[in-house]
Image (cartoon, rainbow, N blue to C red; front, side):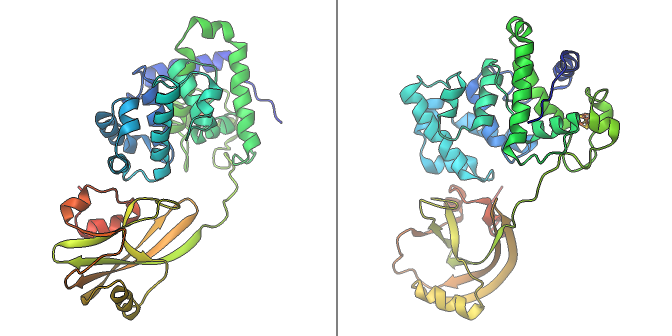
Length: 362
Ligand code: SF4
């Protein structure tokens, strides 16, 4: 394992840069561990600018850990709608319930306790401990991996757990080296943790040329000196995603649309969706399917195709709008709803094209 070392002079320059250049974000400097936790979960896979309105709306509706623990699932999912990865918000709620039972409705400070909570992995445990409580824990996310890999000129595969581990050790060793300074300045670790993330968002950006001329690390950055920024970080490619061809049916009866609640396990568990099958149906097959559901189709028309990418699966969707005559009886987990009712339900962004079709989103 390689041994990377951070220099005090350079890192102090970095922290000063942070204090001058940091963005004013609603979860920063509130002194509330709930804010750090919630923002870190929301920021996984989503950009800061996109997260801000979600964060404000969520905190407005659920300002405390007890309010998060007790909110109805439908409301919770609605607040998360658009961020995707719904298991994250379910785990937030599970975690809040554990915090009430075991930790007096507070997030604990020590790393092992944080790590034992639902939905909290090594990165989030490190981020909560370091940012909210000033503990000497490393929090290495994708931004930090990129910054440090470029800074040290590391060409190793950042998908490998041992590469992340190397950088975690590097940060922990640095904290040990400057222990006395940390004890004097309680803001040092929160600032240092956030500057590595901030640098990755403002200077050492992904997918393109980093903004090295404004970077406080440029004097000693190996990628800058050797012009390596486009080959570092190196990330091996993931295996191809599985492609699933789907057909959706937007079944309309008068001013109501048919929706279906997905099973309580698996992809998009417990969320509402338009009725669909995991296959590409012709118009004729679609009409037969709709009759099997117990409806009399009056009119069918093809809608535009759409695609949604999950982490390991891609849905390639075609869709039909189908007008049906009267509703007699409905199978379990199916219901007809008005536009207004539909707007109050959690519908995954996978169906955005068709929600937009009905102007169902703001
Ligand atoms: S100098 Fe450039 S490549 Fe190096 S850390 Fe800064 S932004 Fe990244």
